[in-house]
Image (cartoon, rainbow, N blue to C red):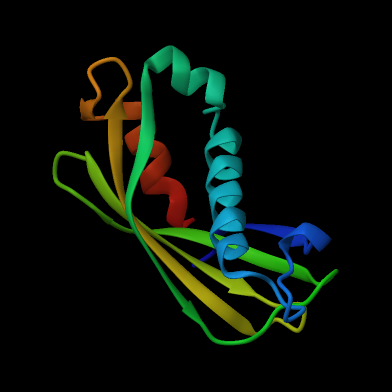
Length: 137
C-alpha cells in the first residue's frame, strides 16, 4: 500500500548536542507531514478555520531505532491506524526513514477533532472523513 510521504532535509536547528536529530524534531516533522497531507486534500489551515474545526492530539509515542544526522534527506509517511465509529477520534502513525532508507523512528499519535468554538470534541464534516479514509493510499 502506498502511503502519503514527504521528504525533508534535516536542519541545523533540529540537531541536538550529540549531533543527531533531537527527539522533539521527530515529532515536529511528523506534524508537518500531516499538515501537508491535509493541504494536498484541499484542507489548508484557512479551510479548517472556516469549518471551525481542528485536530487535537492527546498522546504521542516515539520508538527510536536509528540515528539521523544533519543534512540527511529523510522520508516520512503518515497512515491512519484507527478511526472511531463516529469519526471523532483517530490514531495516525508515521514511519521516518533515514537517507539510506532504513527505518529510524516510528511516531504514533492519538487524537480527535475539536470544535474550535465550543472547545469540545466533534464529528468532522464528511469531506474530512473522506480525506482521512484516503490517508492509506
